[in-house]
Length: 152
Image (cartoon, rainbow, N blue to C red):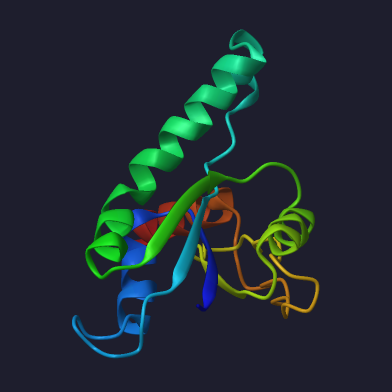
């Protein structure tokens, strides 16, 4: 049975990435073992300051449950074995830990790319994108818009 480790941070984007990988319902490819790993957004420092560690952990688990429920149901309907986890610590180390538990597995990074943010790799050999030097700070864009409006 093939095992897939899927990192996700957005429900719709993950569905767009995973659904094409699935065999047609009733095909003879057999079921697979899927481990869905939620990567919840970081709490800002103000929120994190007032929540206890256990409340933060509970929020992260609830976020992961909500983000994976649709994909989990879809995979189970196709006869796959599915488990859900919430990421803890650096992604590369977490991937090594999960691979140590399940053995050989394919790692799928289904996290939504973000503008001007380089996502941390999930495996040591994952290629890194170069930083985008063409991004402009918001203040520069606002000044440019003000100049254009003033010239008209």
